Image 1: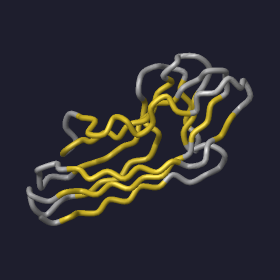
Image 2 (image 1 turned 180 degrees about the vertical axis):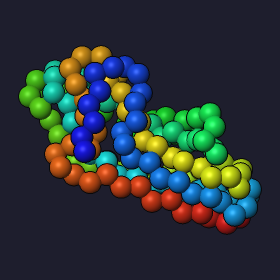
Image 3 (image 1 turned 120 degrees about the vertical axis):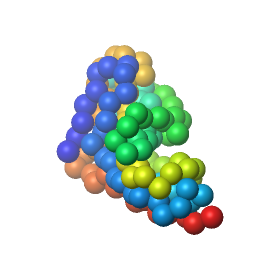
Length: 130
């Protein structure tokens, strides 16, 4: 389902996935694909990947997935082609890790959306043994 954001604060897109590595030396390959949209002139979208280990505090190991993307002077609603994220994380844990995509309205004008135009958002996690 589409998620809208009018704030310059990051919110969850509704896409998340969990994995439990078998060794602390393992890496996690994160593959994600999502679509985005905006409805106002000069609206900008930033997106990032958030990580939580064992339900604890969160960090953002990858903050520049989208950086001011979908920035146009067109005031009509604009859908983008889905954008892909490929990120190799080094979490150094054997506890459960949950990855979540987040986005914000960087310009603070209009509305930005994730999971737009009836598209599917996807995330795949793979453990890469050291």
